[in-house]
Length: 369
Image (cartoon, rainbow, N blue to C red; front, side, top):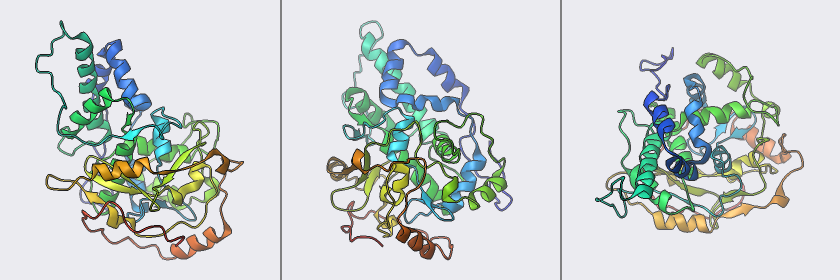
């Protein structure tokens, strides 16, 4: 199930094999059920065919900055963006018209008399719902005990009934939280390791018009660590050639970040730190500690869904006219290079962030750090 790291007593665990039953389930779904699944999950079902690489995920953990939700490397930062995750799901350039899904306790209007004979369409929808709950519970937000998060049921039920919803922000929130937990010493990656793996591999391809097929990558955690330590910004494929970067979400109307609703936490998201990934000119970012805006969700936690949806409705977008000419390379303000060098002169492990149920909106943007 897992690999032992030389420096760890406990094994580092990720989803390392897609259960055969999940493959069989997908193959057995009828046309109607598949159409429902594709409408909600898009191309994410393709993750069933990805071979997991635990060495990539384990090597990435030490680079994670849990105060800003980014990976700082030698002279640049990267982080998975909403647009990239949406690209994998086939929702290219369509985030403006979609709303983030949030966990719900159960069905909104359960039909206890549901039978195949009398309600074929509803039965097909329930078959699709069951598969999506299993898929998300196993592949996107797995639990160490192997159980499926019950909050996914009501969430997917809403997604089937309301077509303008999306799971994109939830997926990214779960990846962020998993990285933070592991950075603090956790040994189980409870986010979507397959998506994070693909994301990192594609940024290393340095072939603007191709994907990862046929590319040779390092083997083993130590080899990946060495490779990641040697990375410089000229070795990165900044904007994926297959991903339209015409429009991008970059901040709320009030502060320099957005909040992403997940199953287990609400995470701050600051794409202004990685504008090169969005095909834009990189300037010095606002450099506040975002970890204080994380909201851990639990049975007694307040879930500010209304406020977060309001933030989403009022978020700002980068327009097509702000794109740089050469999407394959980083265009950076010289002042950013100086700022980055000073900020990361001393590489120390960030302090553990406090568990917080703080207000979902922090101080307003005050300019660059």
